[in-house]
Image (cartoon, rainbow, N blue to C red; front, top):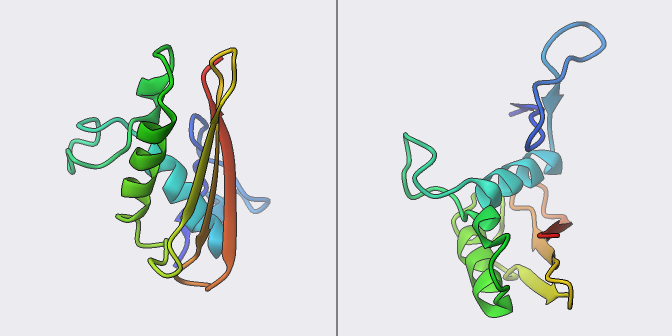
Length: 122
């Protein structure tokens, strides 16, 4: 099953034939994980508990353990993330306040190891 390509903060994309571009395979899981992590709780009107709201950590003093726990709890709710082996989450807080997160997980559909790296803050 494929989803429309919808990069966070972006717009729908068009494929070379003029149709809406589709994402497939492990990219679906990555797209959905980013959506889950960056959506604020209560912003998704059909599912008020959906989302980690990582953007809410920007501009506040960074707490590495809380950010890691937030990411882990949301990954456990994502169907594309295999529970075994458990995902790895490493958060690093830089002296300037920038936060870097590295996530590793096994895609439950393809059984392949996937990595995501992203930053929050400055």
